[in-house]
Image (tube, rainbow, N blue to C red; front, side, top):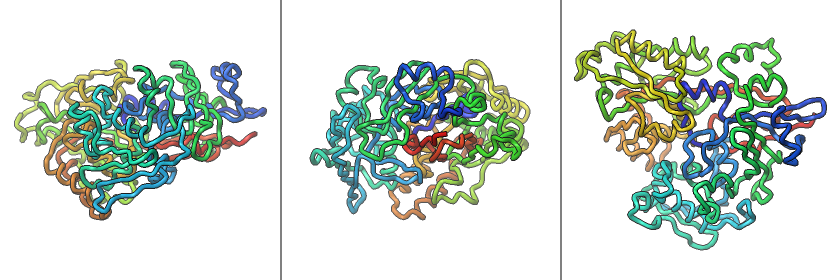
Length: 545
């Protein structure tokens, strides 16, 4: 689910080094065994090691579906909560609590028919009234959701509810206990996909209105429920006895929070799945290394980029933005620092996105001479006339190797000095839009497999996720028409046109598309190595030794 991670710092510190949703499990001659720290907790929790998956993670920031913005928190929310529709392991939009739906001929009215066997974790039935409450809660300005506008904003009345002008969302109607109708302002070809985002999950009204920290003891509808959470130590998910779908193969998923270096834990037989750090990729790729047979590689639907605050100097100038893009030698960064574990890019949308052809798009390649010329052609005329530039990143004072390289190249190729400013990692995705400097770094991981999820979410003028505040009315118009276009080929052509304009105007500095490297123990079966976030714990199983 959601996508935001601070690029270089979080990539190196969490994603690459530790993994945002790394899974872990241990096995010995007597069967599965937990890591030492977790093993001490399991007997008192009456958890069987034979039917449990032990995972490493850093823990969620929030479990409120309306508030979640980072992929780590989202990975928990998608297991605890559910919605009308979901994404399966084949990246298809499929029924979830809604067993089926009708779409009106004009594409503006969706009627969802709910399952009658769906229940909350406490056994209470889920009805259309619960969805109405959940949507209106997410759009209540007092809730403070920053994702409701983007993912629910197609529904009539959402804007008015978010602004406090209305008490209800006019376009959400309960036809009967198990029929929900959503009316859109206009046709949107990706509307169903947007409903897979956490903000569209159903929550229990009594639970969600019980207090500010209700989400620390959430009552969801997903395949797993929160059984135990000890901050920075342990988090336990247990299968939901009331789950309406096919029951998970494991009874518990036990997360060891900040339990050590996961790569070391994996090699010591303490965990079963781990992300592979940049430093370890080369040896795991070696066919002679025993770990090689356990290595899984998958391209990720993600974009890691440097953003510019286009609303103020100097990046209100397109030529200055273009100059900063042309000044960066990405091949050196990817080859020397990231050891070719990722794919450098000058464009926005990952090439593996289904049904999208971005061949022929022209990006801003490394060209230091062109970069200097663009500064001279800008309204500033010289780097000496540029205002001070601050680079906002996630961290606790240490500058990542990637950011060091970026700053060095801007100074070497442009003669520009850039200062660093750090925000706390756990807060970064939630505050960077308001607290950013002139430059910032971010990673975006797709919520659903569509170019719209990158182009419109990140670069539409009024998008909440448009951190750089880029605005081009022509791009907005193309994106608006694209989402209404029912012909897929024509729609994809519009997205390609918009992407070329966004790239040419240097709305951001694209750096790379990520690639996941994971080690998976042979006894972990049905692990889903997906290129994006989706509910996966219900698929996995453990083969007894």
